[in-house]
Length: 449
Image (cartoon, rainbow, N blue to C red; front, side, top):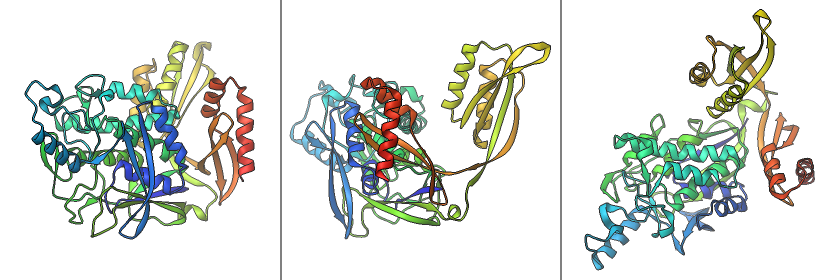
């Protein structure tokens, strides 16, 4: 099993994670093309910096010619500007604290704040989750990456909604929904996918300490949204008086990390360091990402895992509904869904619906089957599945990048295949035969290796 270990000894933020992804081998153009495809007027600036003697990759987001700032620096600047140029009560830009920066209208928001960008919001109250989903949905990235990015935003919205006793759909994002934060989140989803790992494991997170300023006052570190997002995670404070884990960083970890643990046994292939903006005398302000093969997999030919199998016989369900149910089950994290024609009692034709899922998702998916189909009973049993190690690699064709899924056993490649959705999208966009795109992607992979 190919894994990535994320070490957050100096906290975690979106820009630090982007830097670590690039430093660990994700091609910069993958993230740059992702940002361009969002169509929000942002660009990335990628540079090499040194933090306490460690060379790392620094990623900055520029919007309207200005670079994003750490939250406390932003509010110092805003306070100075307000003191020098006071506004009257009719100036809507400062009414109720609703600046056109990156501060959440309801809560603590994240630690990064950039320049005002008038084009960012559809109205003065910021972006709602519906609009954010639409922007991400139109982006030129894979469907899994879209789902991951939306899940990160939904995690942020759920945390804020709980803190402020409201619904997630009523939460409007100022800081969290700003352009640089959207860039962080979508690039995190795309970059994590490009790593081609089966699992991301996260270290305990150093959350920092002290107080942090935001639009609605001063809050203790970690901020309320961060605390909510880091439930079930391992956290600590080294005593540094600064906000080290931002809500965006916490949401990325919550969605991407499979578990929290010490450095796992692994055969290291490569590592990368992503730099934060600030420098601390006590430690390097970086996050480290280490990629390798899990030790438990090195001596075994296949991985073993327990799956739950759900089955239901259906003989009175509209076929159109059957297709919808399959899509819904996959959206709710089923690993696989399929139907088999069967001849049932009284010689009626029907379908056998079969769902493969993680044991922890079985109850939710069973409820969905009862709700969406006409069945009166669902069979449930556990099965052992043996799997080969799998990873992703990107290849460049004349029409764009295609992911290659690679299966291996004991480090030896046993199979490879171009990702169908990437090839289908390219074929449709460029009016090229699908088989031509798939053949070219396979050829590029073989030439590369």
